[in-house]
Length: 429
Image (tube, rainbow, N blue to C red; front, side):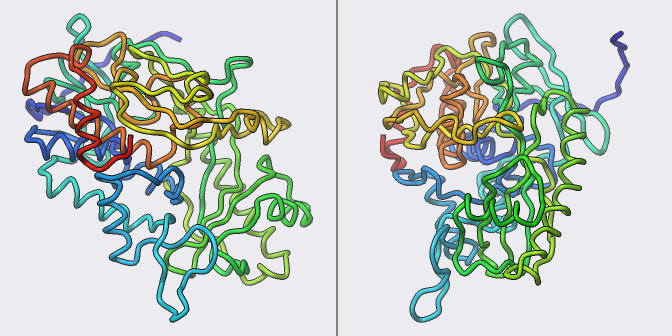
């Protein structure tokens, strides 16, 4: 297709120490931490709130790999628990006296307030409804970023950039190499649209996936996800349902993303109506659909170190390890007729994400943050869960400030210092 060049009038937002593209939990943690250290930070987020997959995507189960996490993860849960914005993943929702129990399932609106407060108190400038859509390169360095906003185009410059877009958008614009999909056939993990339902008749906070799937199938419903999940939410009235799969979604193609989201919206209604054909759920109703379809796998950017499945099996530890991962390899079936248990053969030993996996091989003033860090298909399927990514973001924020204040580069910076910072912040490494 022929490429057309457009002349764009853009407002100059000025220069910053650190520009973070992407305001999910990883990007928010990076921005808040860098600002707490004293950096002037701009955070650019495409949705109308911070939190990304957690809030706009309704991925509200934060119990996965939470153990041993201090720092911002601990601060986040303290806020959520104190304000009644969390509940247990399993079992009852109240104690023997009827008081609400805290836990790892969180309120999306509570999470928005918490993350935005973190940035506000740290002094981060936040741009919502804004995307990094172009870069100006000076050799291997990013010289400036073109930002598309609801109010027109803008530009900003920074000494250091952080790609926390989830899909590697900023890195790919800067010419970094990336990979996506299963090594054998190229299929990426499926996308999923989460949605809320009221009136579900589950007695517990959650239900066994296979039993839930069989019940829905008994109504005549035919969906790609045979192992759906429902979680009771902290408001005690609504449940979060994950029952939709969208296959071969290309997060770098806006048409592919749009088709997947539009189809998922319609399937959400079909799934909700199937619930009402079951006696225990006859009073249920479809509630809020996620603002953004959940993308499990975007581009994984080539870094100075690439985590592999061998690192997971061997429990690799590194002097510059900034996050200890304990989670399983969680590969959802990548095709409609695939095996839903495809990754169960891997026995993961606790392993480190090293700082070097957060340093791109192809750009000199850029750090990687979140699930786009350098790793293979199976490693990504383990480390990508939210608490790990918040921890990674905190380490990136520390490193970003140090690199800028010392006038060095991410590749030269000693990653063991980031590890020491994380240990001081209470992370078990």
